[in-house]
Length: 110
Image 1 (cartoon, rainbow, N blue to C red):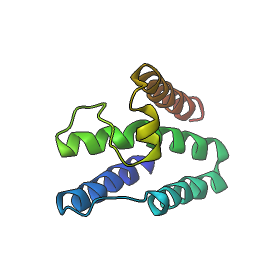
Image 2 (tube, rainbow, N blue to C red; image 1 turned 135 degrees about the vertical axis):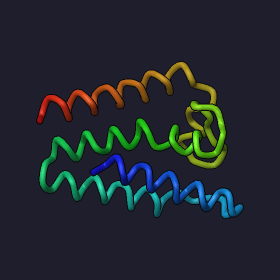
Image 3 (cartoon, rainbow, N blue to C red; image 1 turned 90 degrees about the vertical axis):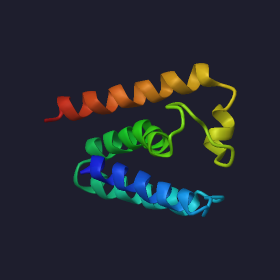
Image 4 (cartoon, one colour; image 1 turned 30 degrees about the vertical axis):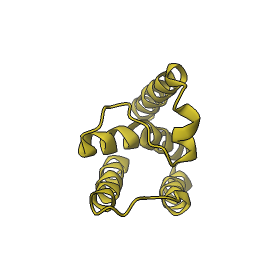
């Protein structure tokens, strides 16, 4: 259920960006995405956590692919991107760990 949500979230953000409707405040998007994972967590807390990790691991990269940017491109507005802009040595392992951990949790809890 989380994969279609990640894909649609990236497509929606991509459509806004292509219309030059740049996202200057990420709070509402963050709240929507957190609410979605929280809704999953109500039924299964472990899957809620795994969903949040998977969203974090995949969303930015999917958006980068849609935009034609490099896989590990970081924007200049989001606090997250600004923090990691000069810390690729930390960003890539964190994203990788989140992805692998989410997959492990999903497989382990089947």
